[in-house]
Length: 388
Image 1 (cartoon, rainbow, N blue to C red):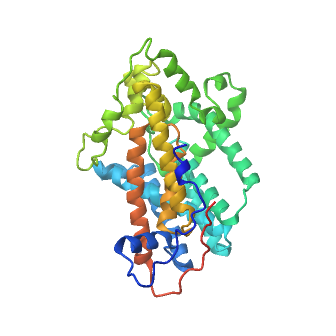
Image 2 (image 1 turned 90 degrees about the vertical axis):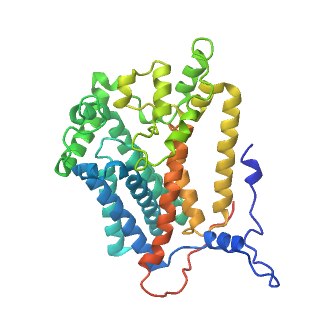
Image 3 (image 1 turned 30 degrees about the horizontal axis):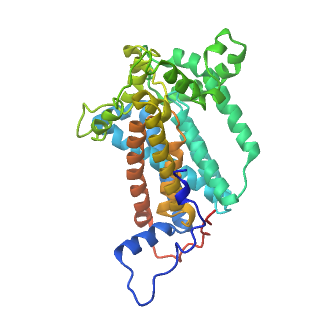
């Protein structure tokens, strides 16, 4: 219902201003945000720059070099992750539209596979899953069809990795930590192979029932029911306790080294509802989602308000991208936001922090065409997306 006012065909959104009036600054900004940022040659450079940034960042993590960044690691992470996800989207779009072929396609595919494998070298699936989702989303938007076979392959691979992550983490993670015991790039290939092997053998293992399947992880209904059952009859409402943490999270860590972690709200819920001990939150973070968080704070009224805000935000993204060029600033904002919103386990505070970091990376990415532009070239002739 909250998204309903934003629905429509978007007719008239791109009408040129009257000839008798000089377009204002706001109109110029709006028009530029809907136009494509890059030509074909610049598109290739953007793809490889984004993939290279992601590979270098992931290599620094796997080798332990990233520790030298200190409190600036958060800023570097937000920029590198955003550049990578947008480069993956552009890779899928360029492939689906027929622009990425031959040697460039093989080079881009190799870069995508490498950065995706490295993003899972910490034994977390979410980084690789976001990259895969970005490529598929770009391909579907350009090709206007869904690659069902590829979706099936991706589901099988991620299901196997999800099944084996528990045992492989016990083997490679340091005790009471979410980090690897040994940080080395050389161990990544063997670790990924061991992870895959552990996932294949997991269904016949006695511990298989202890780990939720990939389909079970796509739903947080059990967390919502747990909160409803206990609140407020057993556990009183938090009365905004998790939302109050947001202001302290917004300060960049390189300015405030002791800032509150973005997972603090999720950890608070986990301890409060007996899912974790306080000392366990340093090792594992449980996902609760915005619905369970809202009910834990104020009950059903908060659920309605959070749902309305979420729906309105999604409606704004749809309206923003409905008439935008496929490589425009508006479309990149919509794509990056969609990828961030796919992580349903985030609470409001961590989602807000993630979105702000993402938008900073998008602004940097949108400035890259001016940097990589070597000479003046004709305007790009990519089609504009149609409103639905």
